[in-house]
Structure formats: C-alpha cells, structure tokens
Length: 297
Ligand SMILES: [Mg+2]
Image 1 (spheres, rainbow, N blue to C red):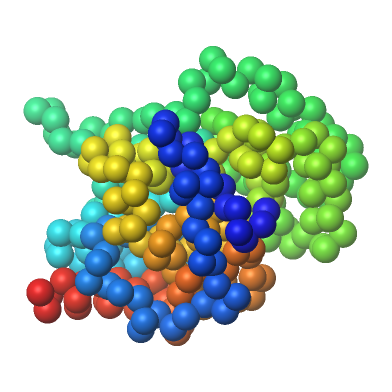
Image 2: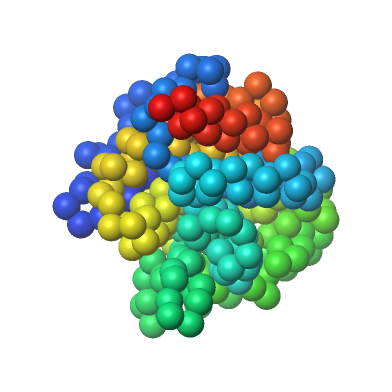
C-alpha cells in the first residue's frame, strides 16, 4: 500500500481519496509535539501496544484506561483479535467498546434499563460474506498443505470473519514463512496484513484496498456509538498502535501514534508520532499527556 494513498473509512459521501492523509511522515515526530489539547478520544491497539513484550496486559494499562474514563475521554479498543475477544474487552474494560478482527466487526457498550449491554455490528452482514467464506477455506487448506509448520492463530475459534495464522505468539515464523504466506494471499487476490503475532487474510473491495481495516472499523463504530462524523473522528481522535495491521489507521488519522516498538518492524506508513517508551509504558505516556492536558483546561 502506498503511503500517499492509504485506505480510508468506506463511509457514504466520503471517497477514500478525500479521506486520505497526505502527510504520513518519513520519521515520526516525538510524542511531546502531539497537539493534545485537540484530542477528544483515543482508539488503541491491544497486542504490542497496551501489552508487554510477552503479550501480557499489566495493571498499569487498565489504570490508564480508568484514568481516561475518569477524565471524560472516551476510549475504543481496535484489535486484530477475534470478535469474541472484542466482546469481552467491551464488557469488562472501562471503555466505550472494541473493534475486532481488524475492523470486520465491533462491539459497543450501551446503557439500558437492564444494565450494561454490548451490541455487536458487522462491517457486512454475514449473509453477504459467502464468497469470502469459501475463499477463506481454500486459503486455510492451501496454507496447511504448503506451510504445515505455520499454525492457525490459537484464538481461531473466536473469529467470525478474519483468517489468521500464528507468526509470533506460539510459533516464530521465518522470513520465508512470511514471504510464502504473502504469496498465497497475492495468489488469491486478498488482503494480507501482519501484526506482531498474527498474519491476517481478509477480502478486498478493490485491488490492494481491504474491504475492512481498523480505520473503517473505528470510524463506523464511533459513528454508531456517538453519532459523530467521519471527519470529527479523523481530526479529534488519536489512534495508537504498533505494527503492520495498524497501517491503515496510521495513514488515516490526522493524529496517529506508535509506541516505540513500532520501529522494530516499521509499517508503511509510519504513525505521525512515536512515544519515548515501548509497549504499555509508551501507551501510558500517551494517556498521561492527554489527561494532563485535560486537567490543565
Ligand atoms: Mg499490535
């Protein structure tokens, strides 16, 4: 994907080109330069961003999410993890909701007379995904035959739309494995993106443009949850992530941040800003900066 023509939320009335961000940097700026006074919400990746290097989420990340809530700053998780995991995040964390499977679906927590309920919405109704489901099975079979050493993602049972293989969680994929996985995706004409732990396959809406991605998922989730416009989200929410499956969101948001480990395997494009520290410590630095600015108002 070109850094000049990033994917963008597929919202009626907004073409991808209108939503593209022409200012993706060659080198991210320091977090201290982020104009935090304009930030009204935060969308965040999970693995590699609020976790530690071993994939565990420390209590300091949950404290940071509570701090955002207590400052009246809404937060939305956006993960490549399964929809079922996103449902759990939306139920149990102090956040507005969670986008799962890189934007294929999202879960929004809403108050109701019965208490807190989580509603699930899909990018496309599952009835319209039959062609993808059959293609997904062909890819799954082909990977099993050609790359038997590469396991499916350990969380595959919770996935509704996405197909993911383990490249860094319980199995360390070689560069040859990654190249072969990408070649299979290219052969099927489907989108391919890697997080720090998984290689994801998903359908495209036109050559090289994924049908869904984190930017589209976040935008549609927030439109549903808050009724805010695409442009408001783009300009007044910040996105923070760490790897290749965050690239579309890095490209689309006016203010995108990478935790420092984003530079270990730089995605294309890079985020606009980078935190001083890696993993959850970098996330906490971003949250502190946003909350401190809110306190100063
Ligand atoms: Mg990540």
